[in-house]
Image (tube, rainbow, N blue to C red; front, side):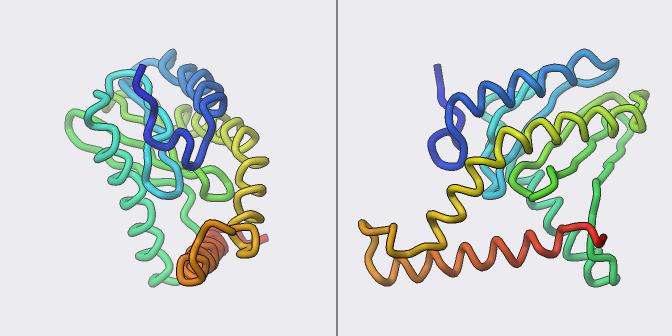
Length: 180
């Protein structure tokens, strides 16, 4: 069995299995062809349905890139929060969204006839479940990587880089949060 690329880096094997079982429920909806879940680094967490394994990495990076670039565009227009993206073509629709902390992104690919309104509701429920799976690990990782003294195997220069990455992630996530 081939491991998912994000396994061991951002999510554990048990998290991947739990997420995959939750995501599979979307395949029961009429018109859904495939679903991919991407982590915040652009690595695929898992995919189900009609998505070839060899395409996961490219597709995963495209999903994250589409969301991030759209967020930048909306920010420039004075809209600080992006909820989802819907891409439509003659033969396919794609729905892209993120769980509340930006730790995982979902892309659902379906036929043009698929009821997107229903799909949005179902995908949000799946994202809520994914959030529950990821929240404990992400909190631990954030604490770990923002406390440089715990990174004893890294050089001082590498520790500095990790602090920069952690700061950038917090900045990005702060921009994606809803205004309350």
